[in-house]
Image (cartoon, rainbow, N blue to C red; front, top):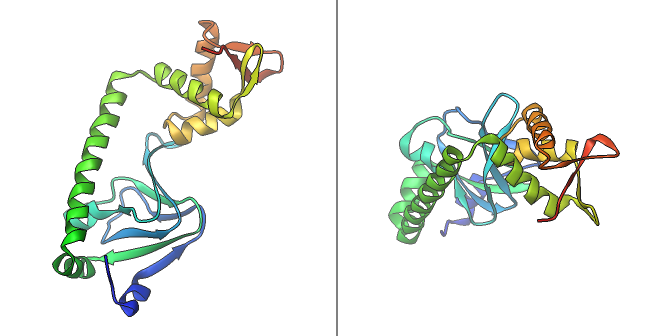
Length: 203
């Protein structure tokens, strides 16, 4: 997508780390292209937690549905580090579509890919109960961030419940309750360090 320098400068904005670009439910009249930086799209699953739907990087486009459909934002967008965005208004969007057919094709492909991804996420949520979701998340977290020992992976519970709220959309209190259930079923083991740590067999 090519823009004149003056137009480009006018519509580029900088967002500091952890700043909210827009919130779920807000009215939206802009879409965004990431010039540099990273953005997460998060969907609320309860009052205290949200699920990260997708992580976006340089060149990615987001927020287009509110601009096209004129409906409230369906999720929240957060800059995870210092990020510059090209903020495209409806007027600029119409101009770009007319002058840049490649951009039009990119928008169509992107919408198709996101629809397929959304269908996959919904199918997974509908077919998997919370305990199974948490167990799958525990295995992933243990392999990536746990401590490997001869007994298995040692996992710090506070770190995991925070991760689960952010990544799985399961609140910290609910995660703790589900972990206790997994302990009773002997799927995970209690640690000698107490409730702040569990041990997961290497499978």
